[in-house]
Image (cartoon, rainbow over all chains, first blue to last red; front, side, top):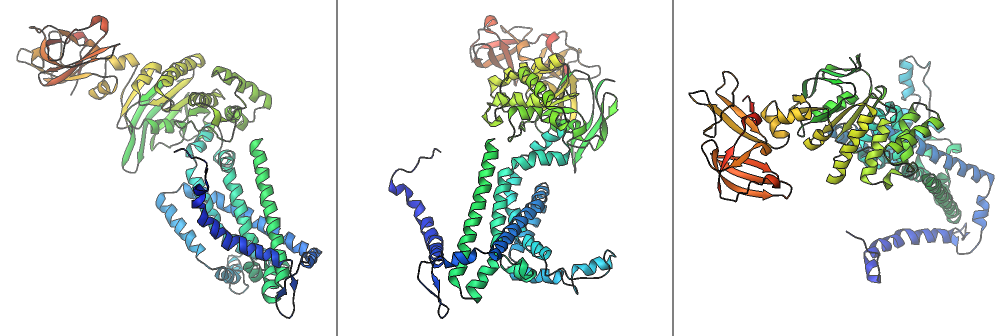
Length: 284
Length: 345
């Protein structure tokens, strides 16, 4: 079937509903937030409409720069860890029998049904001194005494990777299933060991999928505010935690809005940069 | 011995026996076609030679060395897949030089060899093109060049020409055969196209139900098929029943055929005769009486279908020797005994 470009206004009607939804649920709230970010805080009430840059000015400090830097670093690390674990896992999963694949996918989907709070508490227990996994290591003779792993950076990272991993696998799965298995066999007949064939053929063939998944997990991790609080120390709190704090506990909506707008701009810039680099390499 | 030996190879998948006790010796430099209907085990056999499947029993011996336990990437072979399996993210040149790069060849050596191979497949100057921009026949040739890059000991092809249109396929068959003769490389091609096998092979191996039914030169397979399966699969043939009468004469469709011998002790057998060997004549004493049911004039050849004694016989003639018969006409079918192959039943 040949696709004709739309000519008249009537050709655009199928777009009306999604466009309306986007406007109501995305454009309007986001514009409101941008507007609020320029408002003045009113300690007695909520905020008064104004046009000041105070909120952005307050943000430009070493403290918030450090928090922003940490948030971005954590999100990147989560994305990289997820891909590093999920890619080989999903690849091996697609080589299993259909029945086996279904069982695994159902298990992964059930992980998605867990709330973030439950995941946080579960990892708190698992990383605790009294009931945690270190007791197992002690029993196996690998450690001399049990210790608490939470709060700490490792605990935050583990919790967030655990939460994002099912999404990563579900996004990678269709692309890996469609991958022609003879590509790998061809590489092996040409002299590549199985590991080398995987690195030389499977990874490059799925480059675009991997970049897209990285971005998805990055954005997903950037918005996480519960797990850093539950599993980390204050220095492990992300910008999202501070935004929540300002918006809900300090009732400083304009400042929270300014931080949120800033975070969106920074992540958009990073995503754009990644795509641009990807395109340049593809062309070259 | 120099060459490839398959010693009693068997492969089972659960209860299903895909390859059943195959024994075959392929001298060095031979062009072999594994021929058979789909599901006959020919692809499985090829994949075992490549090391992509492990035989359940038996040994694969190359140049006197048992390579059964050697993993694929250490077998030093070249293989062309049905899907070609060209790497989509690499250019034509990078695809061809991939096996050289894996083996750590220098950049100059890679470039030199790639150019040689591109010249061999008549695609000089295509090194920097992406594979997606090539036509079907060009991709085919790139896949062949890539498989030949290391000058492998074995050249394996799995239905390599099946994706091409009929005209291109015929041309590639000739090209592939000439290439193999030039390089003198032991080559094994899996195909279900008997014409392809006849064009290219030194040795045709007809397989059915996981077993080798006959392994011989193309002309021998055609002229002296070992059984009815082979006779029917290679080209078209007339399969008729032969019996003996009290005088010991061979009887086909109620007509005694002088000079035709049945195997000693047998009273019944099958007879295979190629359509081009069947002659049509006036109805007479020494011919099988029949009626022409259809004449298919293809210009280059004329096929005449004759109904005789409950069987249908096809005769093929060239326009020069035109039988000049019409539908519904009574004819005599002559089966020259020297062209008849008697097969055990």
